[in-house]
Length: 533
Image: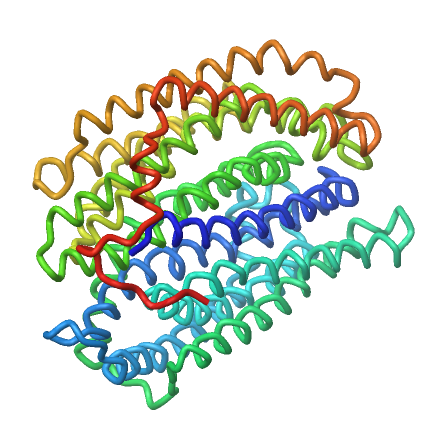
């Protein structure tokens, strides 16, 4: 598999989605601000998305992809599409009734769910408005979960483009709803009316995304059939893998779900501050971490199935090197340029300068854990490709306890910033435990050459940080100016930081020219993947 090309396809389309996401959040900040309507919308939007990332994109994908790959290839290494279609259709037929039941149950329990999150009704968010928004958006979970099965099939066939492009549809729907709310309603009615329009736009986006993925699955020559649900041995095997994978693959999302309960006990606007800060944190996490994790799982599964330990070691080492080459400078840049970035993107309209300062502080705390979040995405496939979903459960459980303990200790002192920092520390703990277990079992070991490369990357990023500390204050007065002043000043700051890092990385050898060249070429020892969409 061409790791760089596959990662680049996913990352490039994810970048497009993240750009639309930035436009969406800029409009959200200006139109909804950080008041009660904005808090209610963020809570309603996060509920289905946390479950989506935890159950569908996290646990389901991690368990489904290795099993699908085993059935898509026979003992002689030839394609076995008929067997893969049978397995996928059996899973889909059981999956749909479960999703319908889970969604219906949650819809009925929504008042109680909001009540629990809202500090048992004491946070001021337990009302008909918040409950209705949450019920409308939760429909999205069932639709997007079925889409995840289609995405898993395409990714297993190394057709990454269609699934990576699907989130763009969601952002386009939300941007359309925001613009409609802005132009159709007077200023005093905009927050509430727009929040309702956003909720319906989420449900509509789920339908569009499902149609999009099903179309590309059929275009790939793959046929899914809905039949009478049966818990066949294959379906039972998937179920056994999914339950522990919920914890192993979804530590970040589980932490986010727990964060909702802590956020409900913080002042109005806290949901908005964390959501806006996480948008900046999710940019490199989505482009780098999710892209690499998605790209290497099918390849790792193939290498391990062929008992090619050196191939598995090589692809995971390459993924970590590429991840750190991009993630460490991204984290350091976001830490030191959080203020200018937040001011340029969000401050204005109903989003005050004080809201921007709080959001910037949250960004700085979140990105402390950014390299760890990405490393977890790269290390987790090393377990799931070997059908080991138990070990990540243990590490995830321990890191969750660390996160909760730190939240209890830090939130009373630092508020929402303490919550963000607690999650970052817990992510590093999870990362350390995952690597330790892989190392002890001989599945993966950090080689000296890779460690030295990471040191060079860190030193290059530190040099960039020194320049940013000097350069950032030069743009004061422009970051909150007109659109051209904002765009020009932040573009200049980002360009200077990127150029300095790139130059230092090249000089120090942080960038391995030979490795980059190798990653752009297919190796004969690696399995040949079908062409991408």
